[in-house]
Amino acid sequence: MKIKYTLIAWLLPAMFMACSKDDDASPEPEGFLEGTNWVPARVKKLDDHVYLDEKFNVVYVVDLRMGTVTSGDENPSFYWNFDSNSEIDTEKAKEGSETWHVLFNYIYFSTINADASTPNNTEGNGKVRIVRTAFDDLYEAPESPMIRNNIPIEMDTEPATTDGWGLYHFSKHIMDYYPDRTIIFHLRDGRYVKFQMLSLYQGNPPVVNDKNEFPSPYLNCRYFIQQNADSRNLKTK
Image (tube, rainbow, N blue to C red; front, side):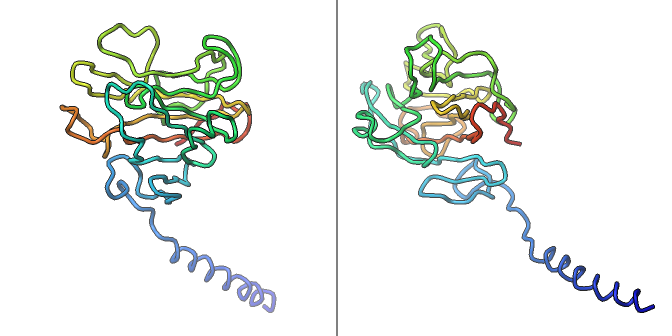
């Protein structure tokens, strides 16, 4: 009998602790982050315009102003570091005093460049590729060698020779993204990054009918960093 009472006395605190933990657990927020139509409400704010979904380790960059550009300006530069989740000063990036992983340039910052160690169309470190798979449906980076240094936006005035992340309607100066395409970076240190460009318009509007309808360029993208070098696992759901 003594053993029975001792067991009960030992179990009761554990039961109360378990109940207390259940009571303290708050439900996960549903829907989207206020002011967005694509960022999960459960994200944690890291900085102005940058959020982290701790559930899947996906970083969201939301409505980040990239500068003032016109369609005639073909040489703007915007450098980004995936580790610090921040912009890198252009001069420091060019001189090599600060590390960058992606450079956005050309019309409306629409070309996505990797920090490649070799010329385009040759194997090397710091390369980039695009696959025709939606972001969350891409579980693994392909095994085949990566040779591209950049991913442009396709132009409707000419046939695409390589896949781009979206389509630029030249007559209207309007950009659309392809929802079923995901970009993969293979950084110089061997890590893979899964990246999706969603919009260069403020608010990530589902439809754009006029070039003056929404301010641009505003970076809206998301990415996942596989921290284990050369692991091709990119699962985010």
